[in-house]
Image (cartoon, rainbow, N blue to C red; front, side, top):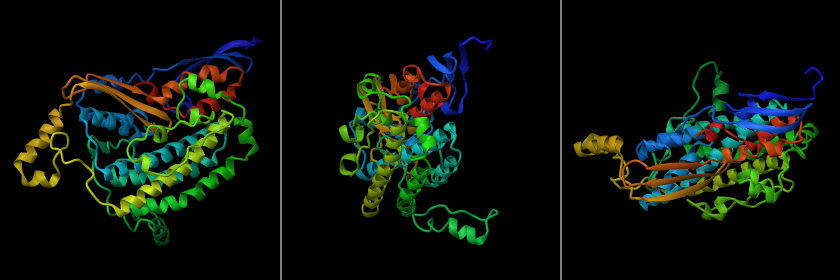
Length: 416
């Protein structure tokens, strides 16, 4: 540095706390941050423009790739927008399945965030704890869709298929017989039985996370008083989700603007009081507990109530595989559906969901064809990242890692 206190450095373009490709240019006075210039756009994926050149039913898979930690939540916003344009409502069972997987996705997201955030700050063991539970929930994704990340399970009119009656089991490999029996002990029944067992085990797992972090003096030294945002400023900056609720604003679309069956479920909205990184940590941990309660309520309802999971509307839904085997007309319909899609009435619509990171919204303009005329997405990561300069000024370089981690950003969600 040649004894010069004021200088600029590159932070990135890749850094573990960023969960993607991002470049920050830091103006420093010693180790104190004076200014942060965020350079996004290094992924340049143009998903919004791609969606305008695809059929409506081809775009669901792109929602998974926007934020590959909040997959089904993103899908939910898109299919809600298409269903609003079509004037349709999916079957009640499909809505309960959607909500259940929305909350499973919330837990998945927060587990990855917690493990990675702790790792960024220096707590290494928690990453392994969090991925232990993530593996079970990823198996729930895989059991119903065949995929673990990019699943395209939600469809306009419902969901791809009903929940399976059996849960995949671990097989031989290098496991001992005793180890195999232990691993498969909760996989003897249906998927719902497995999820129900998870909801019973999970609160004790969250207790383990909190035992390691909540009262840990090093963790509190790294998070308390860092990146403080007042309630008024959080609103002005456009914060949503845990970033807003951490500042004490009780705003949650699941309660304030209910969609699907959230108005039929019992859960609370955790909020913070100081608006710092520590409060946002506490909010997300509390949200995992509340999400677990919602999943349990959905499991109870789904076990007691059967029914269709997709509308029987040949204009917007493909034929079943059974029909295709028995009917040439159904086979032709299948090919026409996936090659030509379906027509959507003219109009414009905005649909939003309470994604794990905040409000994720999809704005669609339809010109009456089988492709959207315009698609615009309101992604929480993009909005939150815009405040990195304001939150970081006056902090040390090490605190910048904490601040980026508390955003819980995924750069795929930023560079749309």
